[in-house]
Length: 141
Length: 141
DNA sequence: AATATAAATGCAAATCAGTCGCAATAAAAA
DNA sequence: TTTTTATTGCGACTGATTTGCATTTATATT
Image (cartoon, rainbow over all chains, first blue to last red; front, side):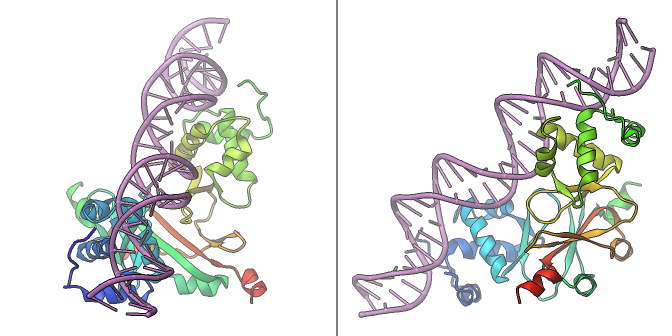
């Protein structure tokens, strides 16, 4: 697929190359989709946004290597699929409103406490919440 | 399926009936499998243990109603499937060793803190860890 | 700038967890 | 014992994710 390369985002290309990854158009489009989103995206949502440039299998492959390289974070909100977001500066977790679908970030984490408590070397952890947000609570009694 | 009923566990039957559920053999076998296991089981693992008495669809249906009734808890260890355990007295979370597969319980929880912090009414939360246990760490340098 | 080479892609087929429709069966109520 | 209603077991199905493989593309090499 020979479409002119996006000159506006050399940062992405550099970051991909730093990780030993080729800066391909499909990958750049996936990164852009995530960067432009205010909430973590599922593979299906990314596909909707990037289908002109890539296919599902490639998106899944990209998300996997991105996550391995620390370019993205994988988020499990118990929806039956995973979401991804660009790995930000500050570590955080999420809470999703089951009523309106909003996803908010939470700054509390107990990884270090659990590491201390258990003696495990923790590779991965997932701290995710579902509920009803204050706004929806207000509107529905 | 007319197989003589297990007289040894009237407690289960009563508990199921209390929840408005019929105490069927398939359900009793699923509960027994979970009670006899030292770690949370996946639907596939339960099926291996109970296939003489039930099928996969029924197991999934049982696990769903059990969890709705508070008989079981659903655990998401980011394995691509869910695990279930009999709902015990004290609330807890889990950490799984990626090396030996052991699953340990953790008593810390931040549900209340998050509830306070966000104003959400939390319906569900999942706080799960993966890593390498002290024992495996010791053995592999 | 042209070429080599290794990585990545796109497609279709496969896998795997979990669900659904429905006729047959079994538990609990009458 | 009979009736009622929930539950089962089967097979087909969905939806997320993965895999094999021939083709293409980014980057290193000349």
